[in-house]
Image (cartoon, rainbow, N blue to C red; front, side, top):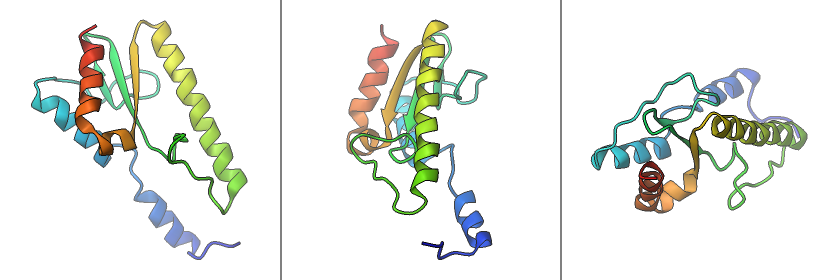
Length: 134
């Protein structure tokens, strides 16, 4: 099946997809900020964590359900299936590699699904808080 959009329209639509400052990220950051946690956003760590607590060596990733193959919400795309599955599987492999690399460097890594933040923000904030208090 061919794309219903022209290449220019598709390019524009795809350019609107942001990898930073997504709604789930903003919600989690706000939840942490409100209870007094201060963090860094842009670091030179592998994988570019979404939220970093350098003194505690904690890296938090907010993983999108589609892009990181959430077991609860991921649906295999119906068009260009091979392309998308290859891309998403590479994302998952990279996630594992980055998590392993950070842990070997002494970092604590927490990965939170976007749906977890949408469903229960306070529980996600508590998970981060628990990791920080270890």
